[in-house]
Length: 140
Image 1 (cartoon, rainbow, N blue to C red):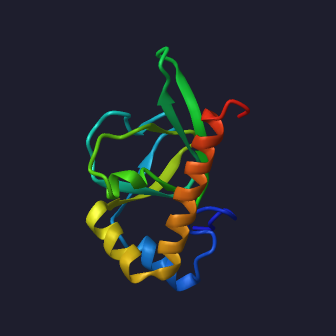
Image 2: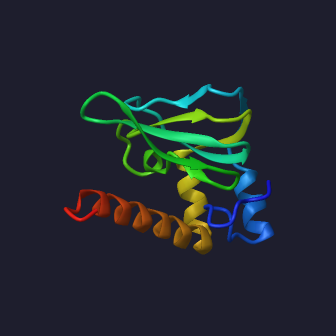
């Protein structure tokens, strides 16, 4: 995997990236296949290895809003590893897609022994919080 700059694994060392990719199991999806669905309970995170994945969430009027498109090295569905609640968004293969599906337990253990991954995860959560606050701001 060549991780995209700014992605979860983009700043990892080769050994950190190899450790991440040794977790879970690899799975491939055809274009337009659902990787997971908003509202379902699941306990895994997704690391994009090849291809792109789009992340969508339902709006109050029943339409879907595009939250983002993630490239190789991206982490998707990370809240499932920490909150145990239903998925807050859906993830769909934009291209033919190869991912690592990593159980929540495995992912938490990885973050616990990898300070770089822990810092990157914190950075991701802060960026998402900033986006949410900007979207809810009267000037945003």
